[in-house]
Image (cartoon, rainbow, N blue to C red; front, side):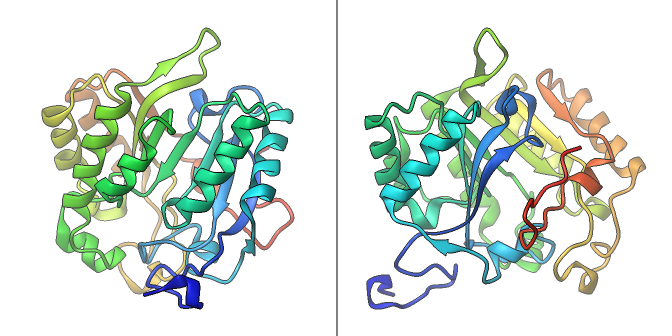
Length: 286
């Protein structure tokens, strides 16, 4: 597939980078938000097809505008001027050439914020080599512990193998999370895990793997915000919200395994975490 000829691949991306929204995000983990929010750049398209994706309007829909490296660099500097604590590209791997060029231009213009790479975890080692020394903080998902679940709900039956391989490489590059004197992330990693209804995400197996292959000192984020979205109603039990009992069991597993650096969410995040990218303000912060 040759994007320069106008073709679009499986992810849906074309020859130019497409961006759906750029804004301070106040719903991320506290070390990423600080007082001014995380400076998020939501790229359009995605290399997964999650049937429950809360960002489906942009990951699998038409929302997004083409953006050159120069314009993106300007937008990055605007995030810094607005007081954001970091620059956080979201699902950027399929637009990496433009992102890298934009970051280089922004550094030349005085960018001094940490770069947080927010990814679904399905990354190639070749991509991660390009990011070595560019990314300060990796923010990967570990969505599943079972390839059958990954294939059924995200059309990616090799997700577990590839994501775990990627997380190991990310950690080798940046290590555990480091924060500055104000508690803001300066380097390292936070691993996210969205708890799915019916234990479909494999909490115990996922955190056992993290503990055994990295350590229980790694910073993790156990997310409670699952709520039916996109095509989820076609795939019970994804057609219902995560219950507080299910989430409490997941939290107990993480504590029992000795994870001392774990972020947990309130169940209210099911309401606050769902964006609407067709609205002027996609998120409801307050």
